[in-house]
Image (cartoon, rainbow, N blue to C red):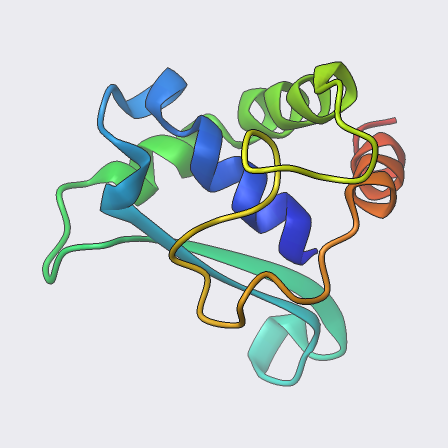
Length: 112
């Protein structure tokens, strides 16, 4: 989930025409609140207080965004992940728990 979160943030300029540094995210293998209890969840949010509506644009294009993420991950020539596909210099958990191939499997299953 963490790798998908990072990749989605990396490709946001395709949909928002804004630098991906304007977007943040959190991912959880199991979220324990409300409607998402015990489900995997990725939150993507505007990086500025009050936002600019970027998260809404991404939400409206969620299926296209996930398809583009899958395409991007599959087409990256790295072996197990790199700064072009899943690593982030602004990751709060120091790029731990990233798995490019598991991200591809999850997206394939989700989009089939």
